[in-house]
Length: 385
Image 1 (tube, rainbow, N blue to C red):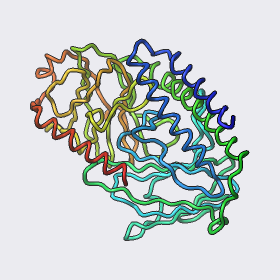
Image 2 (tube, rainbow, N blue to C red; image 1 turned 90 degrees about the horizontal axis):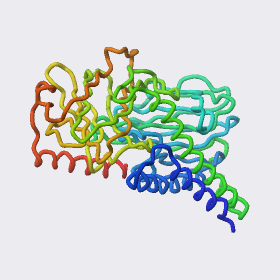
Image 3 (cartoon, rainbow, N blue to C red; image 1 turned 135 degrees about the horizontal axis):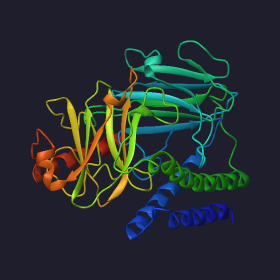
Image 4 (cartoon, one colour; image 1 turned 120 degrees about the horizontal axis):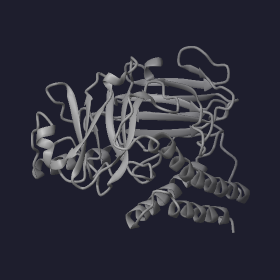
């Protein structure tokens, strides 16, 4: 059977899900099976897009294909490359807070993050008055809007980051290999399809194992209910810092994260499940950017992570998850961040929040529903962009 290798991979991936160290009940398993479904969709898409001679950009993650604590504020795209060929990326800059490019040397493994061979944002390229640009990647290239492909270059990743979901608009991206433009790829064969199913199976089991190990390595070894000082994000992003941690709270507790509102074009916070993926960010407020948050008169943002509704605008909903991941990101930076730019964490009783959170301004159910409606509308519009 042509698809047998993929069928076997799905069964193996299910065994990994069921045997994951954090699974302790039905909710964890249900979410694990949902995570598995997203992995199936994503691995099929990645395998069928694996064409380094006639590449095209595909969405790396989305609401139904989550992985790697995906940022709710980011559209991720990728295309496969050869390190001995030249590629042309054309596009139009949208109005988003950040647009960055990164060349990786291969896929994630359970013990390694792929090396970043090139990483930059659009400040390093010439962009026309109408937002149009053209970038070239290839061996030995140099000069404005031209970047070399080092030996081992395998994937181009593009991130388009939104700060104001309602006001900002995405741009456009296209990629082609310089010497195959106008030519067609060879017709499909049964051998090609069998290879793609095999590759899809390897991607599926690999990504599930990889990110469970990645989370344990970079998050779970930290003390619970703490966040690290800002640090360069693992993986080589040129201008991104992050602060990470994991929480565990009772129903009556809240984790208050206090952080300065920075001058970075993008600053955001999000929650993730133990599967190391974002919580539902469309129908619940599980993430906030600075424009979405309430900034206090002292220039600080005070986020409240809790299961119970604390009645504040900066509530990050746990959505039934008494444990999970927390990550803050700053992007498009022009300076190094220090501990003073980072968060302070306090775990308090929800009932004591009015005493613990200065400048407390209650928000009622009607206003909250309006906030969620705005998130739903903005997410739907962005995903069609």
